[in-house]
Image 1 (cartoon, rainbow, N blue to C red):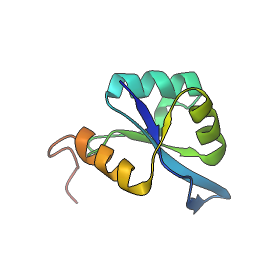
Image 2: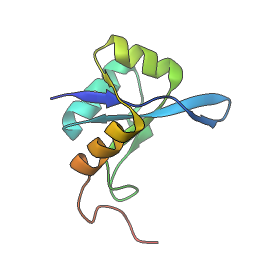
Image 3: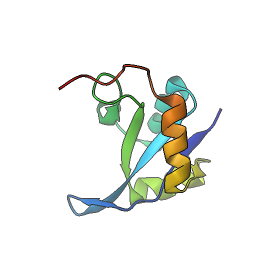
Length: 92
């Protein structure tokens, strides 16, 4: 199994942010814990259909050092589509 990060390009609250995703949700949680990211930062069903964490650029650098695979925007979208939970997103 693998863990992935895209580029930290989204600006919010004085930081640049990116997505941390994995082939398996349990692996995602284990990796995030090893990275020191709080479980409360997790975003998954029903809030969003693809399990992920939003992490800062600083956390991204550490994630890459821990073995996360760097991905382009197109690659992370493909991963999003692969790991998403069908009908997992809550309706407005």
